[in-house]
Length: 380
Image (tube, rainbow, N blue to C red):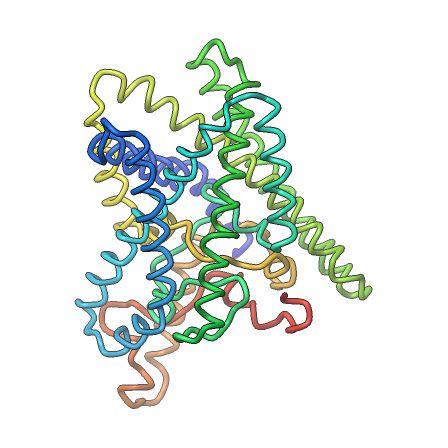
């Protein structure tokens, strides 16, 4: 049954969460274009870059404080504050990328410059072991069901969250080096698609991009099953760690390309059919996607914040490579609630994360859940 649910979740991610997340980003990006000093492009880009980077860094630095507040929040307070937190962080991510992309426009849009940028950013992500962070919806989703770790934003070196110098440097490296490089890689692949996919016919190019991206996504979702079985076989044979990491990097790169193609197609189709006559429709895209994602308990998917480490997925013991659980997570959450209700009474501090709202402290993200399974000598 679990296998069938995972397959269903994969197609729901393609049909539902991919378009919703892309719509959120297009709407939020468009709002910034309309109202953030549109008459001064350079100033607008600087504010987006600086503001997005600062807020992302601050949210990451203060995550331990948010976790402390979380333990003391009522159910209602958590539901409100957690969504506000994600909303602010989502804006920060969009603005950070908008600033980076704006400055990259000064490098030109030639095949030569885009190819070099794509190659360099990919090499850097491999060296940072952050290639997995370039994957987004529809091949990566995140539920809002995890109360205990809701405010956790993983950093590259997994330093204990506090205000130490090590943790501060870890946050800086994560935001500037890892996440910044992901934004650069996305932009370079996007530009390559602009230049190679029917560049003289924008509408046809958009449809072609969306079709190619979705077909590639389906192929990857099918290929992930035998891949994870092969990975388990290699582990039993005690193969070298970096062979498995290389396999994960290749899958992540393919997933990144598929996601970029899907987003580019959907993004440009919105420009061609929805925003061509009225740019203020970006408000409808923004509000509609936010509302639906909150209702579906997947609003955190829009926040491309935090850094997982290459190797987390391939060693997780999961059946699938790409995190696209929706119905599976809800059922697991329900089962956990039933299990909690059968346990003996606990103290308030022990049971702070399981309340009458049904929001339980369960982590469904295999990257976070199984990260502790990787030894310290292979994690860095």
